Every structure is written in C-alpha cells, then in structure tokens.
Amino acid sequence: MTAPPLAVPFWSPAEIEQSMSATIAHLHARRVLAYPTETVYGFGGAVDEESVAALVRLKSRPPGKPFLILVASSDMVARYDLQLTGYASRLAARHWPGPLTLVLPGGERRVPPRLRGPEGGVAVRWTSHPALARLILAYGDPITSTSANRPGVPPAMTSREIEQQWFDAIGRGLLRVLDGGRLVPSRPSTVVDCMGRRPRVIRPGAISSATLRESVPDLIGDL
Image 1 (cartoon, rainbow, N blue to C red):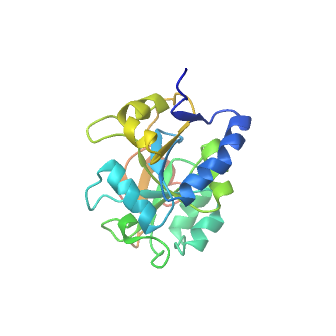
Image 2: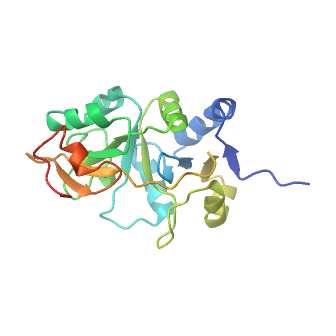
Image 3: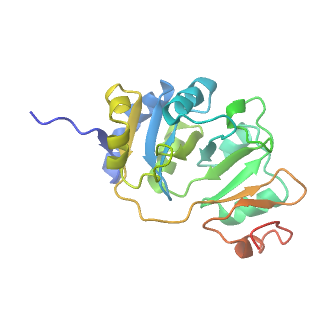
C-alpha cells in the first residue's frame, strides 16, 4: 500500500480551493501551518497566544525573536488596531502587496506580546503570493509567519525539505504542509521600522532604500 503524501497539494486553483476548508480548520485548532510565500516556505498560525506558543515550540524560538504577521487586506490591519499612518501609509500604498515588512505601533489589545519586537512594534507584510493571499482572505484574519527551517539550516524552498525535518510533527497532526512547488530563490523582504519620527531600514531586502526613498525621502539606513 502506498503511503499518503505528507504535504497537501497547493498549486493549481482547484487544489487551492480543495485544501481550504481543512486548512482553515487546522488554523482554528491552533496548530501550525507550513506554506509557500513569495520568498521561502514559512511556518505560521492564528494570531492568538495559544497558536503562537505552538509555533514557538515547533521552531524552538528563543525569547526576543518575534514572528511577523501576514495580511491580505487593509481591513485586517485596521481590525487589529495597528497604526498605519503618515510615512508608513505612503510606503504601504506604494509597495503592498509585496516584499516590504513594516514594523507598526498599536495592536495592544489584539496582538499577543510574543509577536512584539524589541522596538515595541509588530512586523506586518501584505503578502503578494496569490495562493497564500487567497487562504488568508478565506480564513478572514492575519496569520503569523517565520521561515520554515531548523536553527542553522537554510530556509526551505520545497515542501519536501519540511517533510524531512518535521516528519514526526506532521505525522502527529501538529503541522500541516501546503505544497506550492519549488520556490524560485529571491531576496527576503525589506524590513522598515515605522515606530519613530523617521522610517528606518532594519533589514535590507528585495526593495532597495533608493526605491523606498521615492516615497519617504528621509528614510534612515541602508545607504
């Protein structure tokens, strides 16, 4: 007898729609999901303390290293009381959806403290991956995100790499893997701290500072 595949097909429109109800149920059960993004495969789950704790356990994430939040609409940012004003709004209007992560103030009553970085903000990106955006919209809320890899191992570019590293968690139903095929190598998202008077690049990435300065000329960092 052939063993069932460990990963769920998540490539064609039909596969994406067929996977949706069970994937959303997995998120509601506060378990961890592995999924393709516009850069690498990611791990994530619902934005609540129990789901975040499950993600921390799976990743063996040390304190002080938060996860980011993926959204698929501006309404999700507003409903989570995250403040997208001034220069952050200009950056979002120009580069979202896309590989730009903004560290935003707010969200005190909606976002678990474990998702807040050392600067006090919450990292948010509007994903440009069509299948993942479709899932987030169907789910109706943001999901957390971090790279799908063990410490010291490069981020996964295929679902097979995740299966090899987390076979036991998948078998126990703690981790559900969506197979979006082999991803094309690309730069990570650019991360901009929007907590201060001026925007500041805290991780260079896919969008250059020169391009960002077309929207916010007083950007700090990555000259």
